[in-house]
Amino acid sequence: MRDAHAIRSRRTGFSVGALIIAGVVLVAIGAVGAWLQHDAPGRGAQPRTEFTASNPPAGLPTALTTGQHLHWSRCTSPPTARRSYDCAVMKAPLDYRKPDGRTIDVALIRRKATGPNARRIGSLVLNFGGPGVSGVSGLPEYLDQYEPLLDRYDLVSFDPRGVGATIPVRCGKTADDTGYDGVDACAEHSGAHLPYIGTSHTARDLDLMRYLLGDERLHYFGVSYGTALGAVYAHLYPSHVGRLVLEASVDPTEDLNEEQLSQVKAVQAAFDRFAAHCAARIRHCPTGEGPEEAARRMARLSDRLEKVPAPAGGGRNLDVDDLAYTVSDYLDLGTDGWSPLAKALTALIDHNDAGPLSEGADDTGSADRAATPHDSSRAAQIAITCADSSLRPGFERLDRDAARIKAASPVFGEAWSTGVYLCYDWPFDGESATPQVSADGAAPVLVVGGTGDPNTPFPGARHMARALGDGVGVLLTAEEEGHGTYPQNRCVTEAVDTYLRTGRTPAVGTVCRGSMT
Image (tube, rainbow, N blue to C red; front, side, top):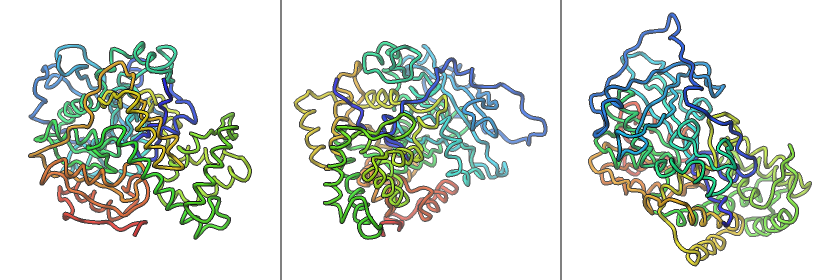
């Protein structure tokens, strides 16, 4: 099988390249109950009103709806969640077409609202991207970005199917191995689950979750890949849509290979803007006098690393593919990443020291480097992607697509081109070439896109808002570099927070100024 490492992850600050640099640090996960500590509520806890919903998901047995209650208790994992967080397990059908059949355990985490009961709106469910990112680990890690919303919402996240403690995908050499050893290993160790871990299945889990959390409608904040999940939910359950934010939106009109092409063009454009800034503003700029010279210097550096990878510290080396992915991680940070990127490239070019470049990519928040038991994995990312995508062309088409991607970017094309082969021999069919997201009749959904996003290019947000339907998708444009604009851009943050607190969307055509102004 050809190397399919290159598909980019769609989440804030994460890339599959980061997953390549260091192996995924996971421990074998047993039953979900092992990471819950069922303590009684602490004495002196303030009483609060629990919400109850009256509209359970249709077609499910009462044992999973009115007969199921979430038993929240103090989290014991990840370590960052041991204080101030509650964890629970939700039972859901493995196969929603057989709702009375086998069930799975879905791992949940919650930070309770801090505001008065009378002002609490309900739960805000968060998905931090991926696919393959743990929400149980992610909520403590990213709480500071959403903490102002605790005055009105419980903040809730979860491990999607295939991830962390929710039927984790195993593709290593053994059933307990959390590495990735190819398609055959996935089929051997996780074959019973692989047909049921796609985004549409997780969206159905979201509706059961909504009901058990006590909300008549789902309030949701999805980032990057999380926008696909939120949009699929809106398509399946338009009457259950509450306040949905889709930030750094994916493009629902592109298939997997078209997405790769759009993304590599966007990341190359972001690198060119960095190179122009570096030439104009940074003394001894490592990429030279502008984008054209930057491409030549990066080509020479790539040739060097292809022959001999550079030491990155801790026994690690950085090779030519790692170079492309780590540079893109800095570009995900927007202009905040430009000065550190220049310094890291100087160390690599002048001193053959890849440590600063690798360490900087670590600091962008790559999930595997959080080293928590229920975190993201490359295996889950590939498995969910291939469960979603029905694209299975032959090698002639794949080779043409790979050649187009290589030609589109002198710096990143080679690394990105291998992503087209990701699912060609996957043992199960995918659901569709592109997701179904039309949500006629749903409440307004706020779609946020940054014009300089190198990971989920801005046209995708425009296409998402249009595909949701007239009167449903409301586009908020941010003239910002980097992957994701909330809460970095004040205008975006004010618009999103207003929508989540009041339900009022910004005026059609609103543009937030930022680093690209």
